[in-house]
Image (cartoon, rainbow, N blue to C red; front, side, top):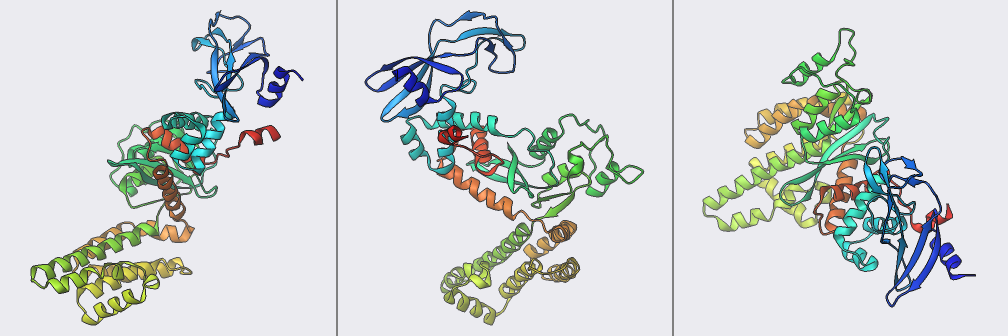
Length: 448
């Protein structure tokens, strides 16, 4: 077997034949030629037989290593003139547009980036981490399904910090497919508006000024027949049944404006989180009072009781349980605050009906309003404001638990990668790891 035929079978590159092979001290250079005669535009589907000119140098792509040698693919390409994009170098079937690496190499790098850390990836493939980020973007843009936003009925909206300095990514997840389907840099109403604009790009913009509250907005969006106004609600947005989110006003305002028929569900995790923060405020206030009285020993001893109050009772150690019992024996506002925090947790216990939860919320709101503890009075106002969303989450059995789990996975990915300098690269890695994308390795391509 000739060496060119051997490398043709070894590389398994589509649409080319091996012209020559050159062995150098640290690399192997394989020169190939395209089998097709027509020139294809790398940015669209345009093809032609007429060439603009021919390159006077070889284009080079890095391929999978051959043992300890770097393997490079060389090809002398032609130029064409596309009616839409102008004069460009023709595309090749074994590499993506603008890439200096073959598809097999980039698929391997993308798979490694989702499975291992930055140092291991860069050392194994011998490229820079910034190059890995650009590869992830190209692979993500190609593999991400353009129809992933179709047939969305129950979604979650949440933000996750991807870099220091309050840099956030807004992620939209599909409850039924259990994956991230959309993401963008930023948070709040602007990010949610960008999602709905991509969900229905042809939807007309409502010229009316947005309403000040949910009831007015919904009333404007409902026609005389009691159905959503098709002039203001996009086709795919009208299919949304429920949207789970935290208690931030930005996301809710955008949902009420673009999908008024969708039920807003408030995640129970954020409600309990607010109750825990209210208890911590009362605890710190009491600790400062002990410090001001000059009883340093009591202040120090009370400071050590922080996790005895904030942790769930079932997760307490024996020492923490004894500390909690001692605080209850003393009495005062700390045991009262702890009891109200546990009342909030009791609302979301498993097996409760919507009617039972509504009754428990009524009792909780009555106690919070009479607690004379400012953090819990504010908590009561917040729960009263989002009461319908809390009950809707119980009725539809929706929560942002999966979204929060995906957020933790995203934080792990970004931390494992030692951060990204580009939000697009971070989003591409999130889609490759948590989205509706299945990465395949080069040898898996060969078996298909």
